[in-house]
Image 1 (cartoon, rainbow, N blue to C red):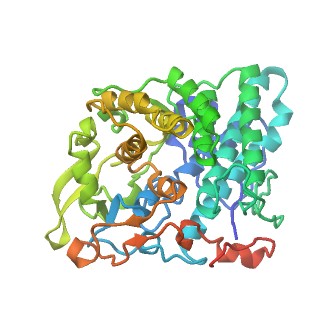
Image 2 (tube, helix red, strand yellow; image 1 turned 30 degrees about the vertical axis):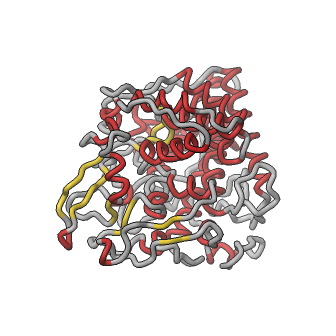
Length: 474
């Protein structure tokens, strides 16, 4: 059962609410058991800040031992970029070995945390109407736009794990799309799962409504890229369109983002991971904790190390500037005399990058290819040049393979690999398996038809709500 009350904000949070665009990184937004009513516009602003803050939770983007980290590094742990190391304490082994069940805490943690964020967004949407006039009219509408976009973003993230099909008009089961705020439990109304198509309908309605608000009342000020502005909404639409096959529109949305936020050059790219530049960042989640997605980048205890075939790829000419020590490091001694390669994108308190312009180039390249087989090389080579890699001359299906490889190189640790393999109906066959491969895991292959590509609905949610249908095979 989702146990989430409206956040009771500490004094630092209320101060941040008054300086929303400058203080978000210092939020203390831990849920309390006391309901905080929205009595004025400052309260509304604070609740919106808390909705963003809920994304820092280790079950969503943050990182700590045993937590889901469902949309940061878990997709790499479940894919083939990270290998379970000898130092592993088993925190993610069910996920990385694809043996999860409906009562797995990672499965339930991801589900509940997404609805926690959705609940906070619904609270803003429900209460902003009273402030959408007078001196607060523009600011209130901008809060509504952000909340609608955040609600859409989280529902899409849920679809990525809990839906079998990503097709735009699929009648297969999606997830409950929650639009009504409940202070105790976002799912207290005992909703049913709706179809994937209806989920997309609601997602598009929220995102297009948010864009309409921004067109009328102006974009939210976003100097640190901590907020969802209109450019970020187009990035969301581009990613969603790639998944559900709306390739023309996805390419168009990606083009809008590319026109607004240029790619980082070879000098700026390593600085992205030190939070020293905003180059190519579309939206980032601020972090004031020690966020270590995957615990794969802590030199003292690396539960998951970078796979050797990925290491070889990133240190080949195809890697370019992406083998900078601020991004990845190799030859670090580990247990069992295994020389490890570790990801260094998120050492310490670095912000999590949710959307970057490089992803938009990759989306547009793939959309071009899917619309006209063999196309897309121009965008791929533009990204390669920005990473210090020579242009390629691939033709035919080799272009798609190159795009897929480039996504792996560019987006490791950012929440994509498992979903990329799933949406392209590929298999996983890890090279490093068992003691011979320097891994604790002996489960290293999953076929494209496995039930593992879709997560079960959490056991406790179904126990409390008989309207929630379970996914097949669980």
